[in-house]
Length: 78
Image (tube, rainbow, N blue to C red; front, top):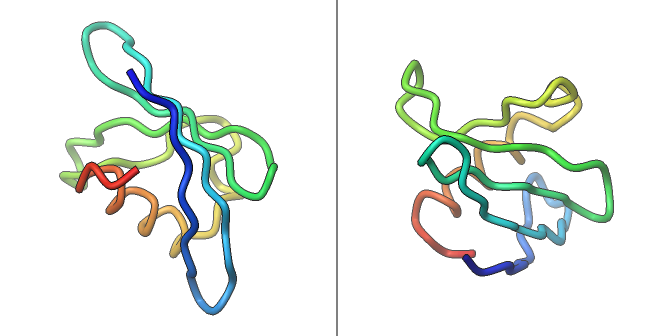
């Protein structure tokens, strides 16, 4: 699996996002860091029909940034 990073502008704030995909119980999950902050884990959430942050500190991730990262991951643009 590849590690990659991308830049994204959300609510007029620039973010540098680092993506590290990994396998967990036969599903792909993603370790995400942005602007050097703490790591977040994204995985498929069947309740919302998309990727979402699931780690204990995911509440610190801005909602619009979480959505934008999830959209990029789902589109394979990382």
